[in-house]
Length: 53
Image (tube, rainbow, N blue to C red; front, side):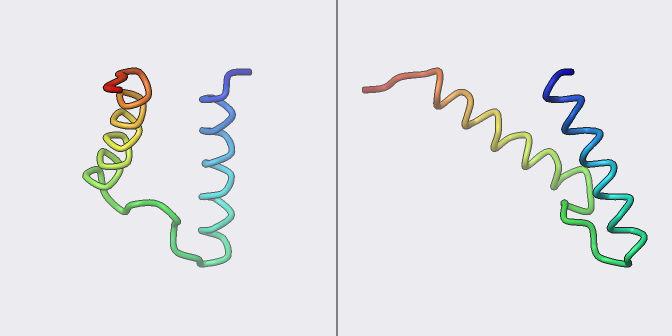
């Protein structure tokens, strides 16, 4: 099973459990926050691929 699918399944399970015990979700509450996290990941990936030194 791919890592992305495992991550989605695990995240869904954690989100479900958090909702059942009335805890706040440990993720940004809107699309802009999620896109910020995606931007960080893309920037990290680019920084790893592009060598300046």
